[in-house]
Length: 166
Image (spheres, rainbow, N blue to C red):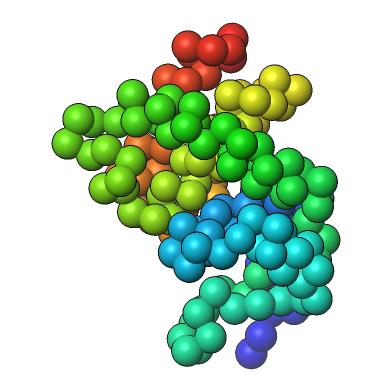
């Protein structure tokens, strides 16, 4: 017997256009890092995507992501801004990591999250630090367990305290 009452249905949260932009930027930065894909090609691929795509086509449990409703301006800004400011962003992140874990040793997905969030934290004064931290920490939970999520929170919180008032 099934319960068809309104309270029995699971609520599915639809990500905002800006959240999808951030996720798209992380995925694009990951692809750029792994495959060496050119910035303009990757932007074109993501901006002109038509509907959902699987993160892992060979895995039946793979996550389907539809980036067609993302904020394309924010997505493009994050990618262009990160590439233009990569040295500054990487330095800000590296300075807050444990000495034993330099940027080059960080997991590729984690590095992409750090770079996208680092760009927003350092160069997008119009976005409150709490919003940036929350968005990327929540996103990281789809990829990692608590350890990496805590690392992202700590690094971004440290950057925010140094450069902007929370």
